[in-house]
Picture 1 (tube, rainbow, N blue to C red):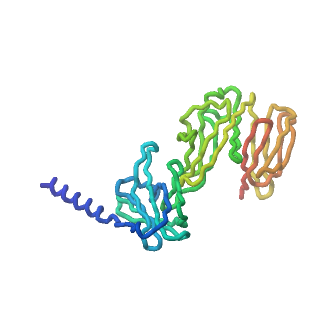
Picture 2 (tube, one colour):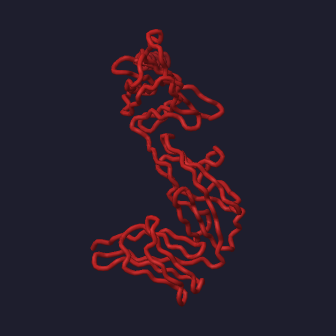
Picture 3 (cartoon, rainbow, N blue to C red):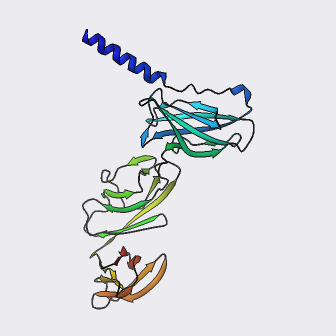
Length: 304
């Protein structure tokens, strides 16, 4: 009896949730133009992948397009294939999402202008319909190698230059990296996980970074060089009464040291008695370069 009662309660609950599903529909015969989307749906950071999840496009309160989600085996992911309808160019499309697991309808802040015969998104870089909006940044924030502590790296304009000691085999390095929030790193369209894949860096390797909302794709070229005895880089933060300092210790006696900020040279010196010292530096981000070795150094202003 208890089992029957429980089953009945679950059945009524499921029917209640199902009954809340919106009856979005489009009178396609009333429109002559279309705009299409391949999209991923997301509510509160959760991708919508259930059979009854839906998205609808609207102009005002009139439904102009509706789609569920479809699993694409080749991508191992779920997509909404949306066709929006209109009779004129330039109308503003808005979106609503239905999460069948909660029975809630969410209005999306993002809007887009209807363009006749336009198409947005593909299976690799889909159009994002999400509330709240996902992150659009696609940057490598740091890049080094697992198990190698004495390395230096510079990331600038799509190029990542890493210098490591000569004792490490350059043909078997395991990248360790951080990216913009929610972004994904790819090599030849295959997802790369930090600290998991060993690569041969005897020649440069190209990676792509795709933003969380998949609207931005940045390409990075990673180059690795080796130094017999790595240069050491030190810094001292600025305070209200004195500027910051950068000290470079190197066996490259007489070598030129260049300090740059925002791509502009701030100062140059030569290694003398094994070191070069730069004083009275303002707070900010600098790159110190000695031969093939680089280090990004951030000088902060300490307030006492």
